Length: 112
View 1: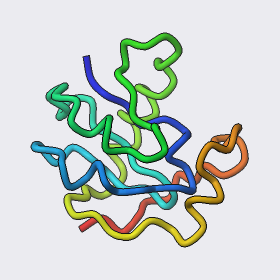
View 2: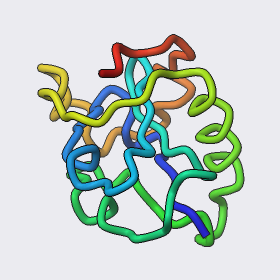
View 3: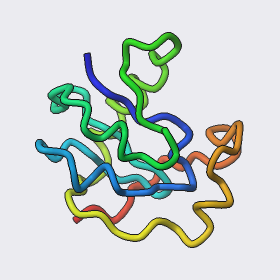
């Protein structure tokens, strides 16, 4: 098992999860984070830290798409180990439906 970041992270990109990860398996895209499934040790400390509830175990039904997306972009985006402030409009997008189709960007973020 591993944890995955879902579309609830898009445009919110709260980084509370980054600080608590003991193995630094988060990678930063332009408007979301992903978890590298080969690096995640399934400790679960990141899940309750996410204000957007965007982190789920890959064993929950329907997470196959997110496992694939996390794996693909973790190999392309830079690693991030230190949190920064969320985007100024993050709270406006929290809980919004359909964010992947509306806003997903394959562009990398800054990383560390």
